[in-house]
Each structure stands twice: as structure tokens, then as C-alpha cells.
Length: 165
Image 1 (cartoon, helix red, strand yellow):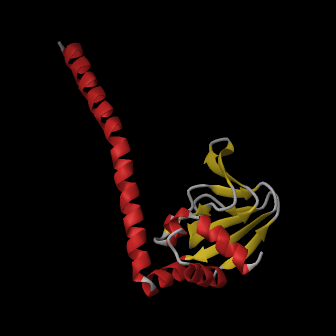
Image 2 (cartoon, helix red, strand yellow):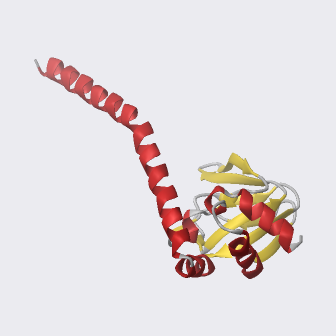
Image 3 (cartoon, helix red, strand yellow):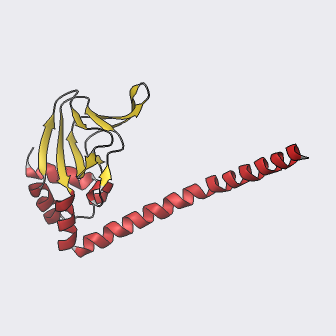
């Protein structure tokens, strides 16, 4: 793939969409491209994650370990960033990723991403704002669930009180 194609793919990634073309060019030029054959693992569940992987071509199966082996939980295709959190913090892979066909990825190491953020503080602020918005949205979506859980607790307490009497 050409540098221009890599930049176009990186621009599709929501976390990177605010980066300028020059910043994406620097990221694409400094990152590592890797190819995987059908059936090959990109990473395994609980592996140390040293950065993110952007899928440029192909499809990846995401699988989680179960008592009976691995179970498919999702699929990811071009423009998907696997390991967004790992770009910012030390993390472990939450699942296994396996190529369903020939797959090409752009591997962005955490050290490279942190260097980019330190050189462009406005990017750091934009990323902080994006994550803060997402956390607030998640909390907002979880509030009704919390209220239902509280109702269940009260119901269980009243049942327990009735059983004691």
C-alpha cells in the first residue's frame, strides 16, 4: 500500500480523525506495516498490548476464550483500530484476533503515539476531550441500569424481610 492509501485509512479511524494530513503522514511513515495470512493470529487474548493495530485490508475475527475453546464475538475490517486504549496505557489484549483472509495492518506502537501527542499538545487535548465525552455518554447510558439494579436490591430486601417474619 502507498503512503497516501495508509493516510486515507488512518483518517477513517475515529480516534485519528482530527489529525492533520501532515500528522497522519508522520504517523503512517513511522508506523510498521504487517501482513497476515488466512488463519494467522494477530495477537492472543491476554497478550501484552504495546500499541494499536489499524486494519487496512481484510477481515479479522475477534474471539474470546471459553471453557470449550475460543468463541467468535465480532469481526473487524478496514479502518478499524484494534487496541485503542493500548495506544495510551499499558494493557492486555481482551481477545484473540485471527485473520479470516489475507490481512494487512498498520501497527502503531504506544511509544510512537505518545511522542506524537507530546509534539502536538492540541492533539492530546482533542483526545482527552473525545474520551471524556465517551465516558460521560457511557455513564449516561448506564444510569437507567443502575436504577433498575437498585429496584432489584429493594425487591430482594423486601422478600428477605418477608421470609424472616
